[in-house]
Length: 451
Image 1 (cartoon, rainbow, N blue to C red):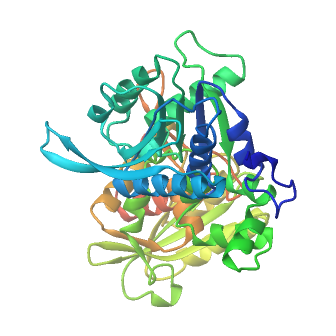
Image 2: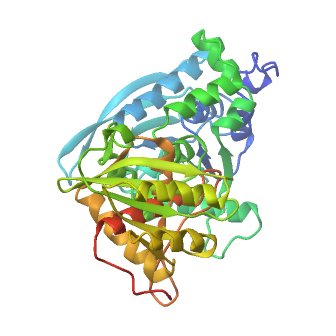
Image 3: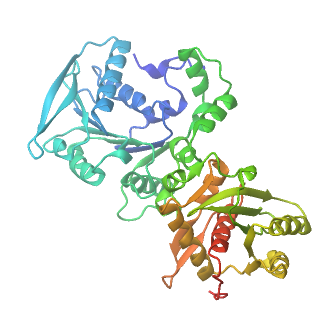
């Protein structure tokens, strides 16, 4: 029985469309970048079993499976057991003790012997276990293997006598070995392969794409739930810690957190439910930063209060579309408070007028953004987070905005701080906070206006 002959309604399919596409692809080198929990490993187990039934093309070819840990190896073997039962096939299942002479550690391999004699062996990630093996290879959650390069180099020669290679994973950052292989696959698909690229057949499935192809209906049928498609997506999105979490785990977009100037863990360590509460202002001195956005960007006022050696966020005010006079008035009201000591305002472009108004109060400084000035702003801000001497609201939009700034280098080797523009702005909160932090360093002024 070929399970792909099941009825083609969403409810009747054994495999859903993206899973069928994977199974139908018999390319020798196949790679899958994917959302979490869309049945990729389950599908690969189906392929392993169905191609090794009597009379099938891989009937006599051994299969070696490796995932990031031993529990995942067990799960794969259990999926194989399930598909054997569905097919009505009889096979031997057993475990083996696998010793690593280099580390002295013992591990467990989970094995299936198929009717035609081929063997499936599932084990945790260890390159040495692939030495002297031959047949088809499956590398699951490859982005999370501890020794990904060594694993691939040890596993690839196993396929020399007609073996197939399958690599499946969610992403684990732009710099992962998995993402390197994925990019080869995309270039190959686009007809832009480089001479040293591996000719991967690329598959990609995001959570919204899987939902469009019937995932929610399958979940409802098996779990007794009654989600609508958009309701399900909204619920998953709400549970994500950050935009980066959502993009990497569910949209198959690798995280670029390694280049973020303020990584999420650094931000999380300085978040507080008491931050951002204006009524909590006490007797400490107040410092104000204002990033003035162009037509399509936000304008943000960020207010800090010094409490001991910690700068506490007391207000984050976001404008979009209001008249310049409204924004200027809001800033001047803050500067009119007795405890307000100093404000630094983005005086670049349309902000020049507000910057001049702030300077006339005797408490303000207009700051013109240049590469050098942005460096002077960004570096002290990061040090405050590293020293845990700042508190910010535990708010997703704020968190993602502060995380959005990346530090790269110009051709001349100077640091460059920038962020992509999206629906939430252009790192407007980041620069407002950085300006407020600079305002808190009372007595320091910028002498750099070109860069």
